Length: 368
Ligand SMILES: [Zn+2]
Ligand SMILES: [Zn+2]
Image (cartoon, rainbow, N blue to C red; front, side):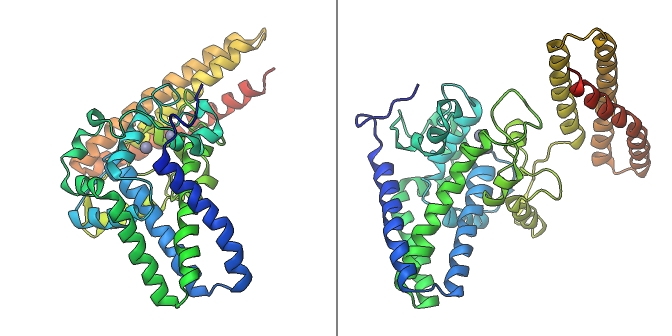
């Protein structure tokens, strides 16, 4: 159980969050009552929301916390500039907490465990003062990065400066001082914080456990729409080193598209991707466990043949996927056309097995 009282209340973060919520609830109705915001003000606010949000996702999260790709110092500086504007703390502190979340997901060491309640995982955990702000042992690599340490040391000043510069820019663009403060500063930070917090609350509650049923993280494309692609959270918890969260080409993941574009421009490299056949193997293994559990639960006279067939098809699929994984690795090294042809034939040979897997899964799930 968590206890939150005056003794362990984090005054710095607490006062900041409560103050901007109050400021927004008071100022926004007054502003909207007096003025209709111009389209340029709305556009500028949305652009700043996107820039700071995608910098948290592609920068703080995938680049620093997970080292999912490498980037030039210029890219690092730009990502840090816009991510600082998000007012989510220094990247050193953020990564320390996030790496603990991955290491102890749903357990006692998880800073925002969903097991302590939806609201706790969403935002109450920020109000609670814990031990050291940064766990040096878990972010040693980042402590060697001069840009990271500079941002950590001067975070408050940099937060004020980046937000001051962007707000002044919006004032210059629109001539609307009150509008710039209410929409492009306070409302933007409000939305960005809640969108980020949704990953810790909603993306651990509402959605599908596509790759692992053992922990609370879920995949939900609706959450991906407001989290710059971070809604495929079950995938992310299983394959955290992948630079993508939305693994399929059509998955909405602007952070993935940004990193990919940077790599094509020569500004990022070594983008880490999990082998697609390994991903499929993980899904088959997870579904086999679920289907065997389902068979164990039911009292069905004919369940033995289902069990035997399930194990047979699952083993067959897993060994063929392993073979494909090996072939694709070999092809990536040698680029031999013959290997590509062999892989295509192998995949075509798998079609029947996939159909049988689907049929068997549906049959078992319909048993009662
Ligand atoms: Zn998570
Ligand atoms: Zn992560």
